Length: 146
Length: 97
Image (cartoon, rainbow over all chains, first blue to last red; front, top):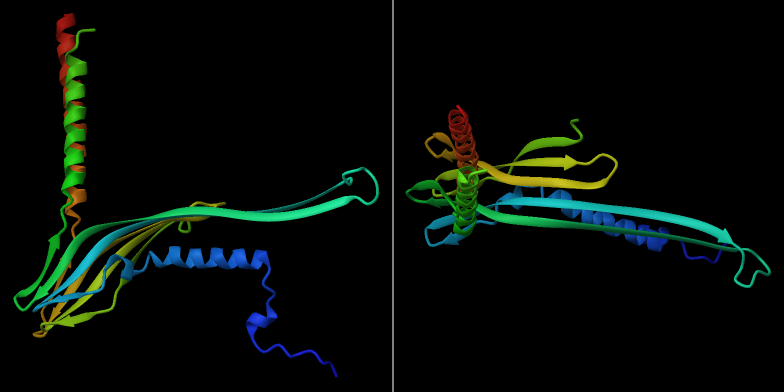
């Protein structure tokens, strides 16, 4: 009979190597990324204000990318004597971004249910300025004699 | 192609309040780039199904007013640009004659 302690949990059975840890980080990040597609990310938790129930809604855009790699190599030792040197390594990296913007608010009161849009004045003003600038530029360019 | 771009409508948990049952719907667009790890997910609220106690049912669309105004303005800019270009072309042709 062996004196070794039997393995009782899955964590004990898996050796936590750096590769395993990085894979777990990637898996967790991927899970977070996929959860953006869920309906709960577009609708916030309901807020009760007196008799009125307010449900905020938002548009969510998530972009993510990652990569992993590993390599190994061998060569002569530093002083050129003795055994050949050997080395291996692995690494990974990734990046992403999550953008969220309020779209509308659902208001449920004893009078009924309605959807009120959230107006982003800054975005509209920027679009209006871009439009005006484009039109002015076009007019200026076309009226200028060649 | 279906793996590259996929669109899905999801249903959320219903909320009951003031004799109304509200069921939210969201629409998500998933884009995966082949050969690369990662992608893009665009999730937006689509509509709310309202069921009244008397059996009445209606759908309230969740409209993105800001985006509608933005696209209208950009469309206006493109339309005006095209109009200016056509007018200028006509004018320069008549000047040459």
